[in-house]
Length: 331
Ligand code: SF4
Image (cartoon, rainbow, N blue to C red; front, side, top):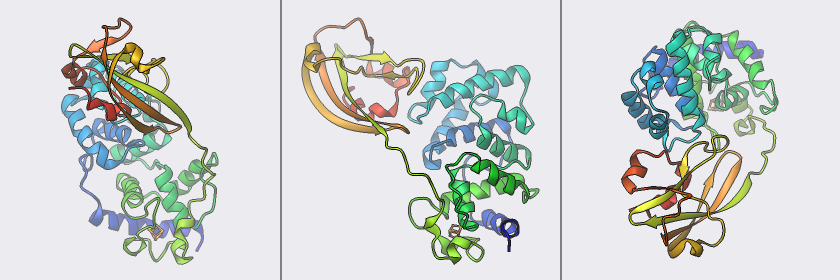
């Protein structure tokens, strides 16, 4: 059996399995562009469990594209607080403004042209919202396909996704949306990364070459990972008469435009009386922060900072979860 035949045989098995075993998720069972688009953007680099509540809250707050387009940017970032990768929220709103002006895109190319939408997301939205045969290939899909086909292509090489997308396109069934979600679902709940895949409950167990060869975890083949850069930061939680010092991050780069406790330049004691300290670590994609935080009773209301009460921090300022360990000091 060649690759294409194997893949063809895998399609009906996968669809059948999906109809019975799929999880009940709040963005399933709809063809509404807006809902699918928001879910796909939220799901980029983020786990399903983490997204669920955000998704429902976000739609409650911004129920239509127009509502999102007309919202204040700070409000949108606030609704995104804790989800990470904040450029997604900004792009979502930028795209909402474009849609409000030019209408909802209904082709793959139109969807792909929206800010924040790459090949994968455009494929997923086009398949799910419009039943277009547009493959969405990410790391999960590559994992299950390289296992099914015992394909040892290095998936980190450029062009690999396109290669698998072209292969998938040849077998895309008319139930494009279901197929696209079924591939994702298999990668999410059966053919898992990091740990043994659940081959015994997999619809492809009789067809999967990696399993038949007894070495599923050999796939996918990857280039060795580059080490993350480590940065040391001293975090100041400065308190002055019930208010706390905040600074806004640069408009570009990591956590762009979000608010945080200031990083100290020099000794924390130069800002006032140190009450407590603790350490925390936060891991981003390419960098790791080692943070030592100090709760300090500030000796003055330093004018270089923005000062806010606990309530204001909770309601008004989008605060990245990197600083979660120190939020407990804000009382
Ligand atoms: S049989 Fe196992 S390795 Fe193959 S696709 Fe299914 S879960 Fe993955």
